[in-house]
Image (tube, rainbow, N blue to C red; front, side, top):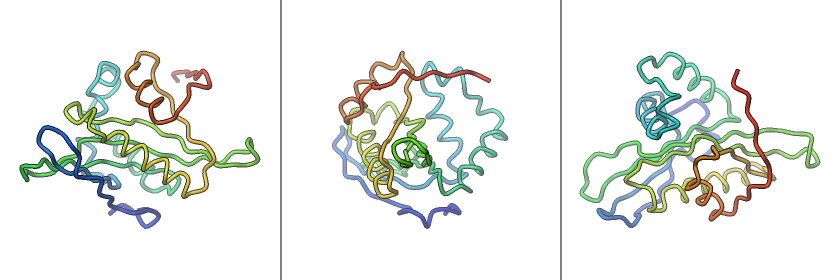
Length: 177
């Protein structure tokens, strides 16, 4: 278990989900050993493939340790167990961070990042289950707002988040440093 896992349920079951093979999906806190699988998920699209370099785990391990040590940050993975009983594997991930702020009468906000689901599990409720868990956890922690950014080219992701109740109310900006 990770060092800050006592702050939330370490394992949640969301299955069974309906897909071609049936199966179960469960959400848990990420462990260092999950990094290669997480990196595969992050790199498994045109944008991520140009950003991620899993050949050197050093920067990823440092980032994982910082996330894991800070109770204001959660790195979660989803394990998929196919209906045929074969071995479970990490098939989804996201990061959830809790940010204090002075605006909105000093309220906390949740920042949802790096939501990824393996291609074969998309459109089967896995992403919606993960985001709903993140929303519920954010409410449990007293957040009044959840925010996320998604690349303008990810139109499918835009539709997904809109179906879950998110609105494109702001224009996000980034500066690569």
